[in-house]
Image 1: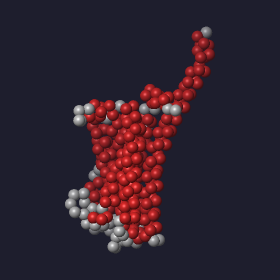
Image 2: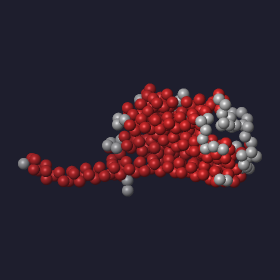
Image 3: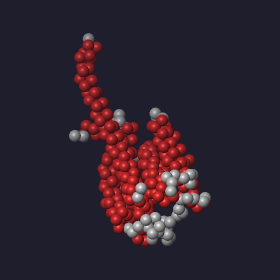
Image 4: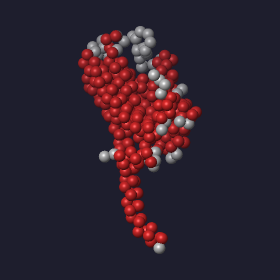
Length: 59
Length: 250
């Protein structure tokens, strides 16, 4: 290997690890927000579906 | 000028306020690091002359040394946040301490890998059980230990306290890494760059190093805010302010 190849490899490692460090928290935030959104959607669907059941229980 | 500072610190302790703060400032920290990286790398790769002994391979220094300094700095900061969290029970400090661990681990990994790549043409080997290399490897294991411990306990606050305690104990390693090249005979070169006093590195080679040091600091600030925001959201997922924030999203 030439000196250039060693330098190129080292800088590649640097950028790959920083790219991982940049991407991971973004993906985590996106996943958290998506989970909250789907939970809210489930809750609102559940509330709509529960209306007849409430009537049933009151009878 | 600083009259509102105590109030701002107090507000920052609120998870909702911190989320907005981190979402706003994290991208700016990354953006601030980019021109510094660009100018520093251009200087390091294209402007600075080759070393008279090591040739062009010495250019690895411009990523290796800032990463090594960051690996120590981040661990110290993690221990400081952990100590504050343990003493005053500040939840935000727990979150910040635990957000430091993966970033510090990333910089330690860069240090070890780039050092290994630099070592091959200079020392003729990828790895040696030299005091500096071995202690830096132990630092990586400590970071992984903190991350593992934090992930292994379900109760987030108990997990942060246990992992924080490990980080405080681990601080004892930092001076050992710093002075390993002084205390023992080492294949790794001694101290050539000094914050205070004259460096044994030529002045024409110093500027890109400081640019890269500054760039990694801004990068760290951006990453810390982003990771702390993610953990804060995970802890607060069931709270009303998170629901309100999600409902406002397009």
